[in-house]
Length: 284
Image 1 (cartoon, rainbow, N blue to C red):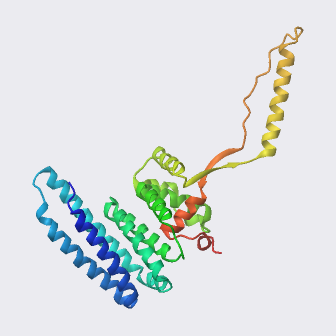
Image 2: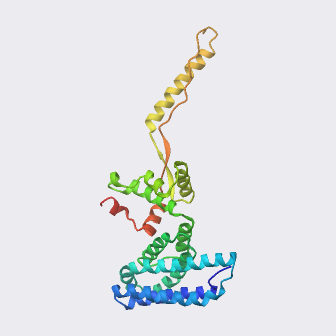
Image 3: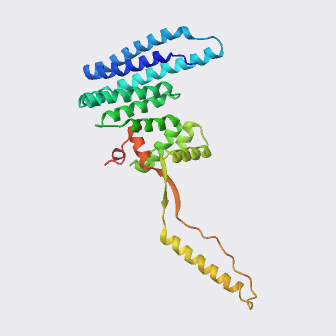
């Protein structure tokens, strides 16, 4: 059972979308932040009052109550995060045409769907970051937005922490003071095996990739040495006059290996949602 009537939810989405855009453009940045929060909070209360009577006692009622509370919590969190970005949004929206603003309105409606259904409200900050990033571009497609937000929806906070770690391990200038994988494991209460599982999950989603760390010359020397040993072994093995013990063959050990690192998509994903830029990280 859905706690908030679908029609009411759509009405709220439309109201938030239209109200936020109008206030950001028409009111100074400091005042706009407060007005957005107050207006959306008022709209939210109206919806919750209208839907309060639909609660059913028992298990269904408990589930409905949980979804209703999550709906309210997520919208409030979204509003708070949006209010922190008002100045950036105002500057970006002032430069947009009416057609571009209309497109952003539609994209904001999509984002609100993700916001309402999100189970980890801490991720809503990243959703708002993504919307701010959208307003910086002249044109952004619906498919692009849905692809990025679909991936974000499937990631848990621990996945995002590991992805951030993979990014900073490559781009952060001050490596001595950056977060380590042990910090991430302790923060999220996971084992090393679980940490590696998270990295494999990020790899499957295309956010990490493998890079062969090539040591070609060393490996060629190792291959040459192994062939010499194998040739000597076979020569003695096929010599009927040889009476001694055969030499021990050793498995060659190559130095080239595949290492996981952040992919191009992973870097763009971090820039889009986590507000991290590799030029700033490296001090360039």
